[in-house]
Length: 195
Image (cartoon, rainbow, N blue to C red; front, side, top):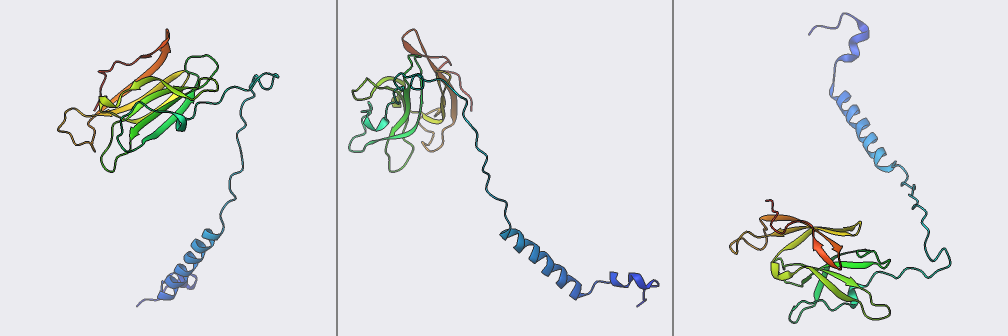
């Protein structure tokens, strides 16, 4: 074995003790980083100021209809309908919000078809379904769903044939409905499909 010619480079020879010291230092850094975490974020966005009737001395706007108080037009037999998703917005621009709900019958297994319903409040009376945008009889499921700018948008999943298992839809449709001339109009064609 040849010894280094320069005594200053003698420390560059690695021995097991060097590896052990490096491993111990690395373990200490990792353990220390687990205890030293940054503080939780505390920044909050502030909502833009809006002028409401309540701030101007008028009555507060009516709350959106509650889906729990609605009788959905579904025949679920002995089980109750399930509200899978819901969103609110003023769809008919009358100053009162509507609730749009994606609903299906509770199933022990499989994927039951969804329905999309528009619910309105009727003053002090019970909320009620005023429109069916997607009927469960169409045998489709809703994956994405939103109410924005007076329109309802959804991504619908369907099946190309009865042979396709109900767990695995093989068709996808984009749908959009908007209030026009006293009724909801589907703005995307029913046949527009992608896989």
